[in-house]
Image (cartoon, rainbow, N blue to C red; front, side, top):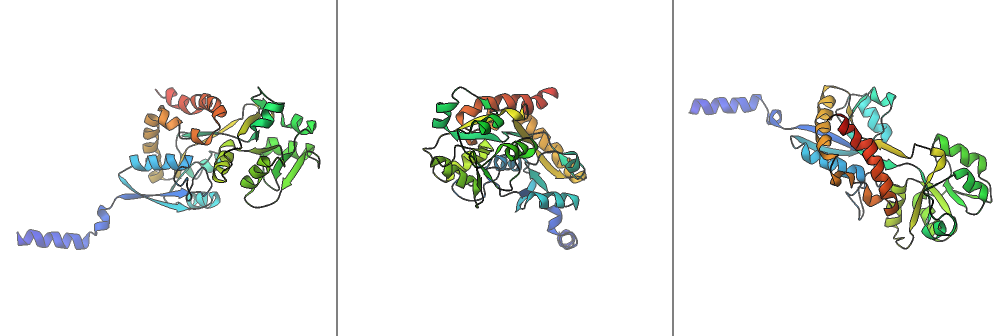
Length: 291
């Protein structure tokens, strides 16, 4: 017995306890609400955060840590070969060279036109979408937009061409989302261009509950009214193994109402029906194809 105990002690000395520890996944978090909400009354309620927490819970064989970074740093870590995962990036051919991507797990509306419900009822009641070019040419309402912010290769040229001193206000301050929503509440501007889920978050945290925002899709974006994303992990054997396990989880979770409902708290109730159609078409369909 003493000999066995001696061997056990020698084994523990030679082979540290760390050899028996769980493998670790370092999750990269972007402090960009409401994708991730790291502080305040909605802490932990971010849509990508909820996806990440669910994946962590179901990947119980791993130890999970988090690191707050910006997106440039996240993909730099992938390029350096550091074992890490990041929930929420949009796939591109360039990113695919340095990261394994999972099935798409989240879909959200892209840039839309947001205005007060009272303004919508007065001028555009019944419309689900509207031409930004026509809005600017009408000169009925003032568009508030952010200086030096990119609104995409479709929307930005329209702003550049049709905005003037009568129909546009250029916002140059910090916290532009809260600033512009406060300006809508005070009737200083008529509408903004924003991600609806981002606007809903900032409307909530500045307690503008009396300001009901109406969402109109931008005609010029045509069929590109939504963006979607999944999870990315370092492009090596470790990352491939994690992504395979994540895909197995997503195949079970995506068909559930609970998973589809992760985004809905950050959408205007009028936008939910269209969101569900897009979810079924883009997110659910990728699972059905594999069945």
